Image (cartoon, rainbow, N blue to C red; front, side, top):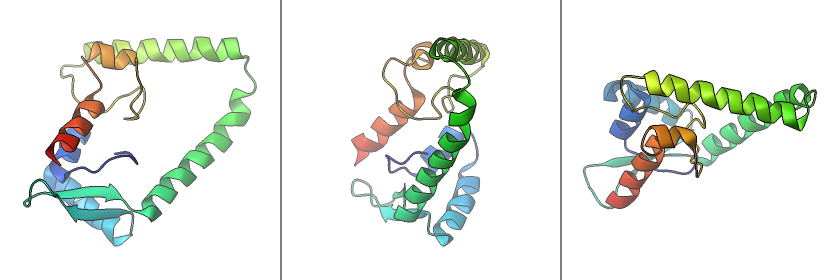
Length: 141
């Protein structure tokens, strides 16, 4: 999910809205590519925790660098005021979509699961769904 956590396959499945076998199949592939590491849970011997490997972290960091390199020239064409207005409009659209959603679960359309204090999406959903999931994992270790 992100670079800052260790999660069980079932938690990832719930977070992504897919089946546990689908997560396991994809985690197997990610592990073969050296992008994910499985480790036994200290708090529950039956559980296996998933976390990004160094290679996986570098891949995400490289993606973020490429994204920034592509977006920066486009965004530089706008004033700070225009960017703030655009951001506010996008935030309103995301919150409106979440209000219409039948279930309050799933990943954050605003931050893509990066925890941010004061997030209006978290306000609509009664807290950040990723933050709750991350605390659940932390509390079981």
